[in-house]
Image (cartoon, rainbow, N blue to C red):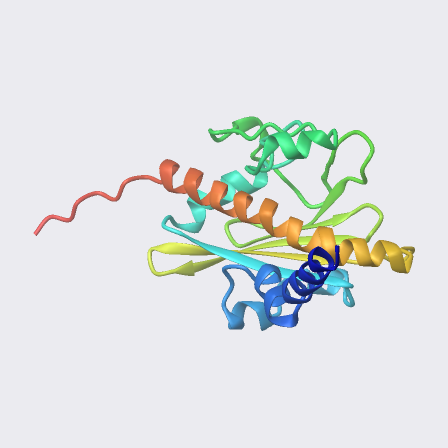
Amino acid sequence: MKTPIVLGAVAAAVFYSPPVRRWYLTWGATPQEVSAAMPGDDLLPEPELLSTRAVTVDAPPSAVWPWLVQMGSGRGGAYTYDWIENLFGLGMHSADEILPEFQHLAVGDVLPIGAKGPGLRVEISDPERTLAFRSEDSNWVWIFDLLPSGAGTRLVSRNRIATPAASWARRLVNRAVMEPGSLVMERRMLIGIKERAERSAPTPEPQTV
């Protein structure tokens, strides 16, 4: 009986060690992207959970932006695992095409997150550069930054989360479940945006000599 307990304790120690935790909170991002200030950081200055993750998209920011602005419940979805999202009643159905009716997102607009969760209010909408949301309870800030990289784009996603009323047990659950779980979902989302943007990007015209 002791062996499984010991093995579980060793696995937990490795999984929640600082290097491993840093990996799943900063997946895909460079050290410079992790440490850089982003527009919207000041919306939640001292988060208890901070993650910065990124992916390179082989398409310009103009091809990435339409997929970002149509995200949301009852809109373009989240480009991640819909079946997991919908276990929580979020009503996510990831679109595979750009939806014209959801391309006009302005500061102050509120995107619903399921039927019961606090909505996400648009705080920054700088087309083809920065899109930042803050939850209506002010405990979550989600920032997307589009950084030109050669002919493509670095898509950087930063989450800043506060848990002001959480007990120590809830904080432990956040550390043990939410942090690594968020990597699973956000990695799929970033790759989903990358795949869609690269498919929809206009093909460069061949240069004539």
